[in-house]
Image 1: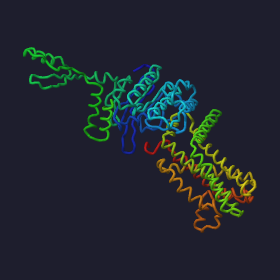
Image 2 (image 1 turned 45 degrees about the vertical axis):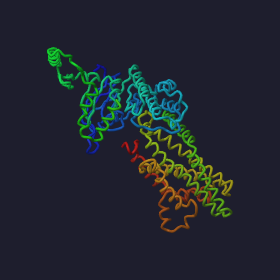
Image 3 (image 1 turned 30 degrees about the horizontal axis):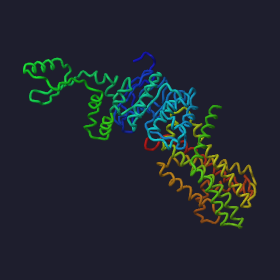
Image 4 (image 1 turned 90 degrees about the vertical axis):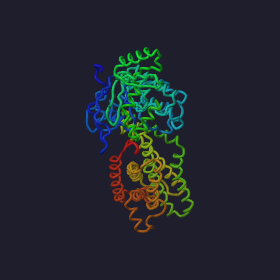
Length: 303
Length: 250
């Protein structure tokens, strides 16, 4: 963790909706300039958490600090310093793209250049088109543009690329990377493992309102102490074994093969990927066969 | 303060542009009252007594359609579309945003009242208003009253598809019993009692005094009282039930 004051600090955050305990004790910090991802199936509490940080929802208990402010107080200064891309949101039907960006720019004390933001969002050809004529992907890019035009220090992206085709997703990733290069802090939620892996400095996997894993995406997979060793045995059957230390197993396998004078076929030693970790950590939900499970599968298929 | 005023003005101008870019809405807003005026003018042609009723009646209806109906629809649309939620996440002050939306409705009300007065002068032999201060008082209180009730009613509307039905179930019966099309003295007592409890009847009474009869403000104080009671209730309900998020999100 950086020595600078964190952009986001959350301590023992809880949120209840009546009997439903949506967020159950989250603790995390996001350093300035960091891209932090919340990963998890729908209903895990990601959006609730983000909307508490954005100031849309009040928390049941816990401490939350966003750029040194309590978002619940809804101070204008905080809203001037952050940009929000909501999960689903609408727009005036008859507003033109450039007109909208220019209108939004005036809300902020030091906005970015409007045409620059139009280009950044890849909307130059649609600059004079009304919002109602835009495709879903183009509307989503307008969401990006409106969130970025105030030149915020901190950007919230709630499932920013859901529904994008692959090319549009890559373009959105480039925009998010450019924010990172500018030193902006980004908190994003996603279903997509490849998105988390491609963009995030750190991710947390959320399940039923709790973190079940947290760390840099590579370390979540590779940091695991387990290795998976697969090989074909002398009867031609594929064998798999998981082990903390493959050294002894490999020695045993290679020695036996040499002793038999055979080649050890289809040998592989792999470390779990983020996807394996994710699937394992959210496996109970899959077994339960509920809506959450379907979402987890969908996320995996999309990833 | 100057900055808040500037932001309100910018928001107002945006709302005006949005209004004119939706031609069907603009059409119904301005054409319907004039069409009604023309139709009833033809039906009552030559009967000045009836024309004296219809002109302030249509003026009252115009206030209700531009404020109550338009705001109930508009706020529901903005809420369900997620525009309110999006705005809530920007530094735009709440007052500047809602002020811009309300001022847009007030502008439409003012334009329509002007059209009705001019039509009354040109085609219906009503003459220019008899009592301008009284006209201003009843237009202003009528607009504030029905605008706040429109915002309050939007809280009841569950989604935008249902909005026209929810608006019309209030709007249509109200204009029929409140003396828009005929003199309320001629309707059955139980309907008249209901109408007397509603604000539109009293707005029309006041407009009638200002536009036609010259019956002054001091004679319409009880009408003003009823309007103010509804206004207070409307403002309280508009603020208390206000939701920035669509029903499916909340």
